[in-house]
Length: 203
Ligand code: ADP
Image (cartoon, rainbow, N blue to C red; front, side, top):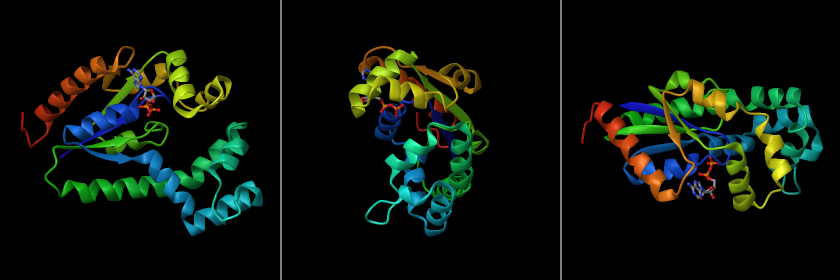
């Protein structure tokens, strides 16, 4: 069973590519979503509160992602502390999900993570794919998708590896600088290539 990492800067088109691969039969593990779910873990919630203060807990007793983001995305040291609290649990869940899915008869698993390399998750995968587009295009896409100010998106981008660094580390690069149907064709080629390398060669 092939395990494939999928990354790219915010707005590059990772989720779009993951959806396209999922339509082709890939099984997708969404690491960013796992990051959201671990915020509900009791132990982690307590540690986050100790580290960042009571104000990160909302009126329902849940961790407010907005408050947490506002606090940590100003300060690299705080991001480091947050990552140190969240990443070990997230990696453990990803490893568990990979093991569970390895028993099934799917062709390959996609581990979709904005921070694939930063988390060291490339060690869990056979190949890594980076989706790439010019930073200003990515910012514009996220501006439209989430209705966030452009400066806000650009400042958060600075806390991740750059597009260039991700490209250098990836085994496969998907350029997403054109229309969506063009992207679909590229993704189809990558899918066929991955199938040809999986032990369940269905191509
Ligand atoms: P990421 O998961 O990397 O943050 P998404 O896949 O969510 O990025 O893409 C960001 C936004 O840009 C989404 O609204 C998506 O529909 C749109 N998008 C992605 N690729 C293209 C493209 N080639 N042309 C037009 N819109 C795109």
